[in-house]
Image (tube, rainbow, N blue to C red):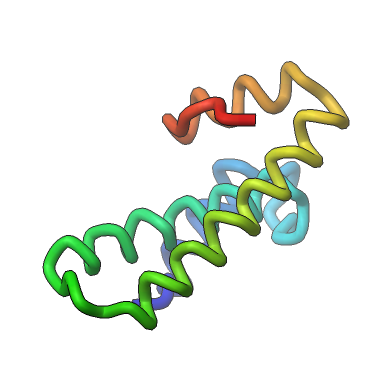
Length: 91
């Protein structure tokens, strides 16, 4: 279930400011979004997996906090990021 090393490096290369930029908020949001999508697909098959559902909700909350930080820092970066990740603007 976790992201593979190749998936992480591809996401970091796409959303990071450099090849080693794994800690910026944009990269963290992109990584969380990928994990959320995978867990959502898992829960479509395993409807009674409440442990995973709780973890998914925690990841969604964490991503939301990162998005609030990005929006408060720079609104244009926020808009381009949510458009690139194709997630809704709920903040």
